[in-house]
Image (cartoon, rainbow, N blue to C red; front, side, top):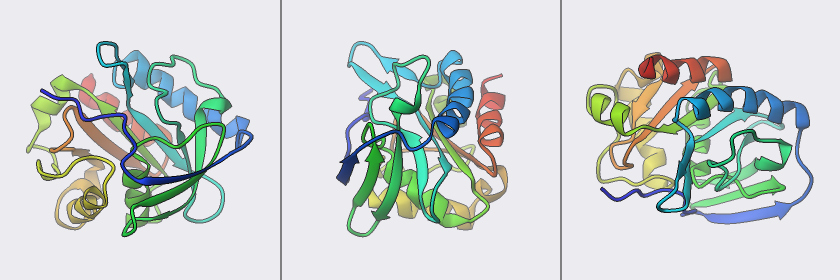
Length: 200
């Protein structure tokens, strides 16, 4: 199996600068620590690639704060490990972000999911070989032909939201992204709990 992870596939417009919010970063890290402890966010040592990311709506409408690229190996994150996505264009495959680090390679997917419903307040993306294999095509599953971080994946989540239980249950398997699962919730705690319930 080839792990397709960690590489930014969109055109990134990054404005390096200070951390957007210490308080919001601590809020994100509280949930991230639970996911890290469960092995759902982490690091493929043999590939030197991090996996897993989380985000919350933050700032102006349409903006969100998320883990920076290649931060999966960090057990306890600080405000220096988060990036504010300030703008994006799915059709043009572009993401603009600001902060100490660039936004995660999954920023495009997070952006597309937030567009689905104003009630979605948080997105959690994790990796688990066991959960992926157990729930592939049993939970709402994206096409196996579509990779992460692409405009096509953005459209695929729109399809799942319109046609499957992803809208009501808030959990999906990424069929074309080995080991990848996504959960959503009105709050970060809710989105995190949904994923952890699968691993219980």
